[in-house]
Length: 394
Image: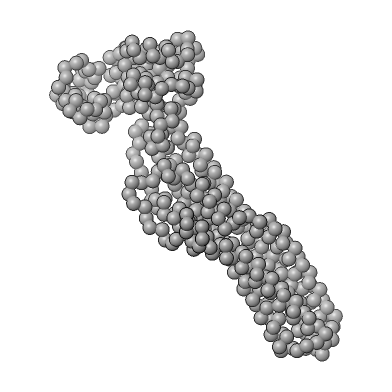
């Protein structure tokens, strides 16, 4: 056990610890190769403020506690070497007028002061004592440590990723709205063609006499079909031109790329199917873990991480919904197209040939085009959903 004087003797004088407890803590710290403050904080449960007050009394200066809300000017830490800061245990935390406030584990260290004067541009300096753990957090936050160690400024990056995912989900929602609009236009087209078929059937049943109410039904049917077709073609030109077969999966994967930094060490769950979206979903934990923070300001960062993971899950779910909306649109067109093709053939067989029988071929042709267009909507969505082609290769 070492016999060097310790700044924590005031804890004994104040009755926070007994001499035996302090001696045992020092012995344990030496045996484990850790700092004494860590043993006092973690093992003996000494409050942080009490520990800082003891340090302030020992060094005869003010103390400063880690707070991620402190607006550290960039010019104070720009270009600083994190390794040197960790070795000397100091960090510039704020400017008070022309005075740079320096947090240090040993405010009396001449080596540290010389390093501060070389690296931090300021007219005057004020040195305040801080815990070594707090200094490490400052260094990790502002000098861009590894992702798993970032705390304070990491929330800015997490917020940016949430914005990216929200923007992509908004665009996916716009796609789904367009699909719903396309299905609505298709219903108008279907009603219009149905009324044309009804007018044709009534005319041929009544010995090919085109009566006024037959003309009215025909006119309304043509108007509905034309309105539905016009609206649908606008949507089709805008949406079918996109490389939908793979672009949606690629953009979704890029939007949740940050989750690679938070993968757990355990084996990821098995994907539910072979699709790329299923593999993306399997890469994200389906549960949340709460890590008690010290100090309390760190809690917001852990919660921000959890929000981002949940947002990534929502983003993948939005991609699934968009794929299903596309497939549903295609199936609606396939169903309608096949129905009108069948209707045209049945009318030809049942009602025979007449002056208006050419409308049977119009129905068959319209049904064929809707069937073909429905296949163009449905098959790419099915290919991505079930892992055909590139989706499997990825």
